[in-house]
Length: 253
Length: 216
Image (tube, rainbow over all chains, first blue to last red; front, top):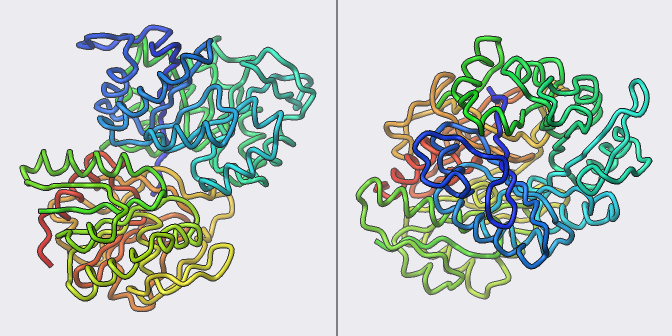
């Protein structure tokens, strides 16, 4: 049986992890590769790097990180942040990323989604959607790290990118992100039910029940979290044991 | 022992290469593992690996683009019986035909077609993406000492199509996703995995080490 995935996400800026990572025995908690190895050993189902590097000059550092991670971790790796062209994608895939997530560039240039799927296959095209509630049962997508409103309906957009070849949706609720009050379940469920591809829920996880709710009530196929894992509040194993106890099928290898 | 991983510009070859190196190191197997786009290297290799990510037709075209590569593969695997492992689309290419988008001829090593998976439950998502267990159809050296079944180890899958062999004799393992999905094929000196052993942590590294030890 296919298992629900638990995905820790690391924010990387100019080659360093921002938002601290608190693992016992880590020599350098700011080194993304060390963090990746720790999560690999802890039984994470996938790992996500979000490159929030400010200057374009430092973009090359993420390629080096991806390459070193892929040498040491034998689990799927998704990389996002600042991806604008299929050439950006190609570099990340060649460095060892399995999937690349595209956010703003897919909104401004929908053809990029089609081009990426045709070139590399849908399985490595993840479309990241940042959405915010604008009315009951209605959500709008935001770009540029959630700063720019677009007027585009999140559900319409999700359907559109899937039709263009997106293989997975990474959905972040702007309303919930950082609040630790749980996923935006109505949003997650509405989007997950609207598309035929897997959906990763993100934004708002504060405890382990939130992970369960993302899968069971939100209909997500994977749950992504950052701070609850980074700060050592919970381990990946604790998260999975809790999910399993609540009837969610997870991998315990 | 020389192991050639065929580089035809498809997918995460870096990961496959590194995973093989680690599997060999951990199992104490002396192996010279190289990524290569040279048919000569394939001819000289003791073992051949064909990875692959993407669409069937694209991968077939990629393989055909290197002059002499398909001949070298046929010679090494069919004529000289070198152990062969196909991964994901590399496994699918072993079939007679691929039916993704268009009908494309495969290598024809395993009689059968590559067709879309159709889960009985329409709410199940496509691609079949994530970790799933293996249901063994028979014993095989590649799965030696690897726990399978519902309580066994997991393999990482990401695919929308699978190889359906004409004869069930070639089917080694299945997985469950709204009905049976074919996960591994094997015939004589060749085997293929629909999942990605290079991304499957414990199960994957164990399988790659078994492949390096395999004496079909």
